[in-house]
Amino acid sequence: MEHHPLTPSQSAVLFVLMSQARDVPNPELRALAPELTRPSRQKLNDLGLIESAKGPRNSWVHSLTDRGWAWCARELDETPPKGAQPPIRALYAVMAGIGRYLAADDLRLHEVFRPPAPDPGPAPVPVAAQTQPTAPDDDIDRRIRAAYADSARGRPGAWVPMTTLRARLPAVGAAALDDALVRLQRRPGVSLIPQEDQMLLTDADRSAAVRVGTQLCHLFAIEDL
Image 1 (cartoon, rainbow, N blue to C red):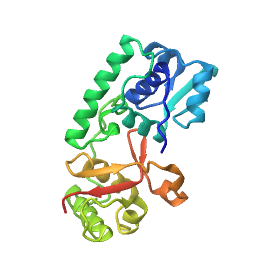
Image 2: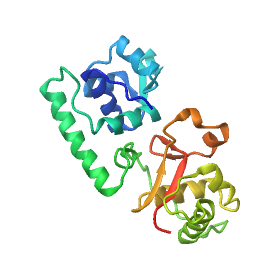
Image 3: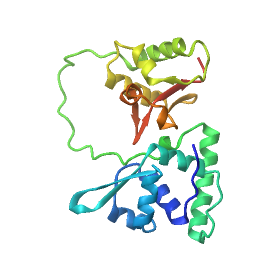
Image 4: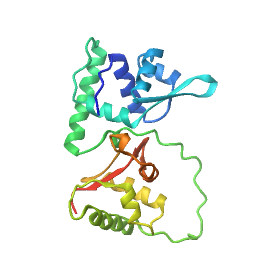
């Protein structure tokens, strides 16, 4: 995928949207980043790096796309854009440090930058007993590892599409499998990532994706079988 050069302000906007990992209304974005002008908004949308839509009170709401996340990941290794002022150069220095941390711990950006936790609200009233038994987490994890090993044909670290993994685990509910995969991908050596080239995705791939934060992930791998 081509890595498009952007202006300092456009780069800062993408990094801010990444840090928020959610839909950001224009007034909030204006308080956190350089102004997103109409030409810049149009360019970032045309490149597929952000999505902008009209929200409440006819105000724009912006979010980072999978392509935008991939751009930010690549930009961690880049030097500041030409003409960048000291605040932008400082931002790039910090992001480069985050890039070194991610590389050392084999992490992805979406594992670090996540949406704020929702307000839990009042504590739920405890129930006397579960009406439907559910499989223990460790049992689901074992099933996932076994299904992955079969799908990867004994090749640790091979990328397995989520369509394949779901097909091998028909007895595990979609929500339970999603929760287990999100939990597993936090462990060393386990990865759940988006397909970087979105043009390769089929409708089945999109339906089988697992949401991690704001990212839809399509590929799964375990390095140590």
